[in-house]
Length: 496
Image 1 (cartoon, rainbow, N blue to C red):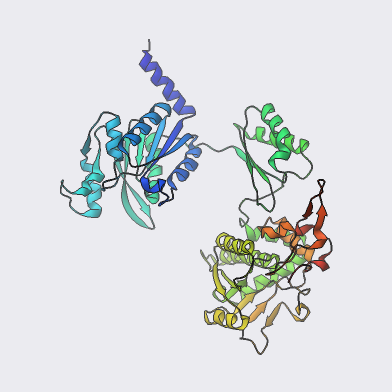
Image 2 (cartoon, rainbow, N blue to C red):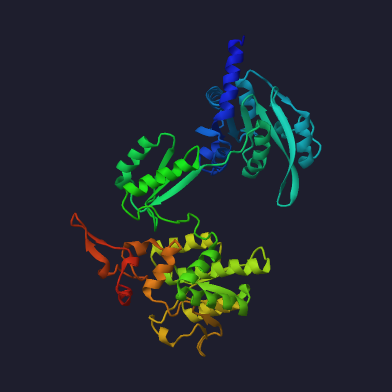
């Protein structure tokens, strides 16, 4: 017959085997002051999901012995696992080991195997050295030293565990390297994630009734609803999780039937640059104007080296198309040549008096494409010369024939004689307004939010296009998104 204690242990083991829980504790005054931005909790909870460990709570605690101990003890009783981050260094405010030892009625002791590891980095340490604090851990703790690699270098890390409490250092790279060691020691099994994300064009208020009905109908499915206030394509993201994929399909079919047609975006990608080359090829097979433009970009990479090519990028819709075409072409270029990395250069001439929305979008795009930006001030001739002096002499530009002097251009055209010598390339020269938006929206490429507020062309002092103005059912004057403009010849109305 099992004793009460043995029965409790069996129940706990069964819970851990099926659906373990965890609490995370981030320790340090520097985090609470905002001096350091925590990334350890985010990394850990994201990765614990792969092992079906459910994080129930995250606490931030300062460098206070009693507060650390009380929080650890509370979490230890409530959750299957506790993960702490920080406070294990050699200085006066590194008190995590001491606090955890005290709350478990233990002392700290100098652990030889841990000290040996730190002597690899600091040299021989006398037991009176403050650096030995690294190795003074709770006497009942398990310590495991393992070798890991980072940036082609090998080094050792130490995993410390007391009962169900795992003690991490606060350095993010060490947490990332220790995590697989912890997973192995805790015998966590990676589970395939059965989930699906749906992107809806309606806001949460508009789908509430049908969503509540779905939650009631599909009790074995976990629903998460997240609004998107500034997205170009969707207003609500739904995350569905279930024990099998067929349930997720049933939920999607149910919502597609109940919601207005087209509410659920088909083929939306949260990572818009993923498989860019293949996606452009698919679109090129569908539209001749895409094939012509993409061939121009591919030809540019055949004629010139990537190191001398740059994209003129100012945040407008036309240069967005060119930037994506070039990114896709670079993917193809790398794949065909077996090259790991190819530099991508952008060129931006700005007076510094533009709209903040455009400036933010340019910054966001720069980060998204991981491009190197050369930013210059007018006049344009001097700006172009500086770019050429930096080795950039081929410029991919978004000009079209409808733009001023656009009818005089060709796909490949050198600068005028009175300008610095460079090659200008105009891939979308023959495109019309509708084709620009077809390309952007069918590939779900991010664009400046001003285009969703009635701006059909962006200049320093542009205003919303009056042809996009309408009065809603409440009598409020609003503007439709730029991509709904039917008369492409009026796209520059409101631009100054």
